[in-house]
Image 1 (cartoon, rainbow, N blue to C red):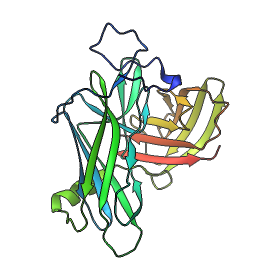
Image 2 (cartoon, helix red, strand yellow):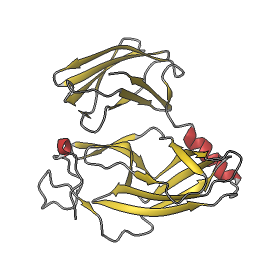
Image 3 (tube, one colour):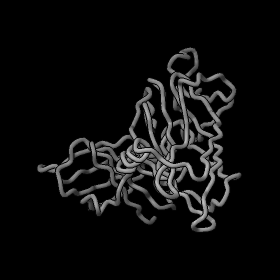
Length: 265
């Protein structure tokens, strides 16, 4: 078993059943047997030059978002071995905040489909995909897993495939302006980040995910609202805020609404 924790997340505990381990001993098991029914990954066909990565999870299992939260590891995509593939753009549907003890994971339960746009080297020619996917999944323990998935050129999608991809594509955060969101203020404090957003429609129960590279951590937001609930102020514990030199990506999730904006440092 090997430790895979970022240094700022050493206090995350992900093993709820291994009660003899102290808080801060979260580890990933790399060689353990995982039931095929627990997690199933597959590539499903979509429209022209589009596929979906489908991950189905048994009850209790979690698959991570692109930024995994406390104690997680992001998925790694290796496209080598593919034919006529210049690149792949992966779209991430809006995540859930999943509380595990005092830690938060960002990810998905039950099922997720990541829409993927394929960039062919030679336009008009078919693309065959060979994907080596390395990723972590968690239940009572966290498993590092590698799957090798293929999508053959000429595979035609069925109506169910197209409907499923469309449903998950609709959950990908849209630009904030298109969603009627406006940034009113952002303030960095020694131990916190305060973000004020205004919406054309009243907020319901919003959550805000902040990304700024692997060396920066942002906690669960405390939210306060204006009287009409069209303005929300999010205060997130943060460390370290002074050294943020990368763009800030803000992802807001509020029931069916998902939107994001990228702020320059």
